[in-house]
Length: 164
Image (cartoon, rainbow, N blue to C red; front, side, top):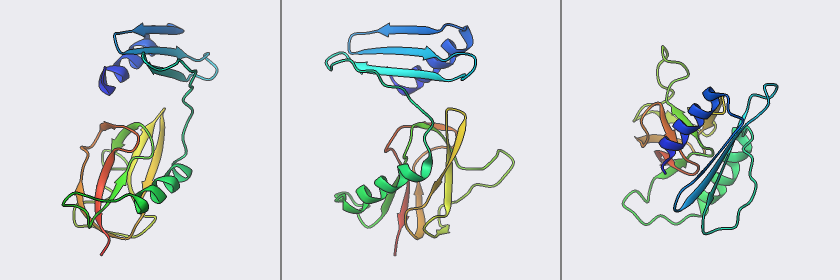
């Protein structure tokens, strides 16, 4: 089951008013629980069938603490492909990627844009919260790796930046 199917299932369950849905397939087991009307949150648990089951609840993620570990991993990760001179900016959270602050505004950055450490590159919507993703390095945007309004996963590459 891919991310798009899971997102559609979550939307369907939220609209249906069901409080809990369990889905078991050959290789995965998914449990979707909607919160009370007071908190309005939806919790998803996805467990591969070959691993022990454990309870996980997704909570809103703040972008700043999540970015710092990614920066440390990025600096220590060896590069082996032709883009080895570029720094890859990765998604610190799961959500929907947006290049613009709103539909009628221009994109935060374009290919060729000069960025400084801390400049906002995009936003990722997760659980109705828009998290600004900031640049980890100063340099020039070489490539945008994700289409606008696309779902992204944790640690998915978003941008290539030339730090020189």
